[in-house]
Image 1 (cartoon, rainbow, N blue to C red):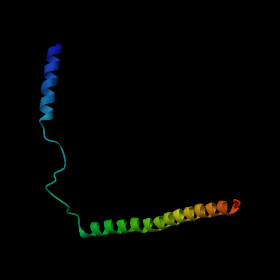
Image 2: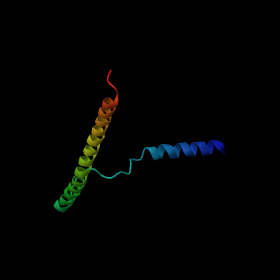
Image 3: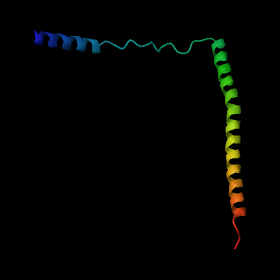
Image 4: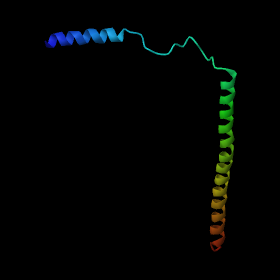
Length: 83
């Protein structure tokens, strides 16, 4: 009984692995219309328009942190007594 089950499972697995993959046919390439391309370009434009202010804010934040660090160093240097 165990031998029959092992043989049956081996045959089933061999047949299942020899079947081609049930994937999408790639012979037909991009066939969407012009409106789909325009819509995707508009979406990309929105993403870029949202990124610009956030990048500018990040640069300003980093500049502000560097100025703050420099001013603290100047205050500490001015506060130390000269010998």
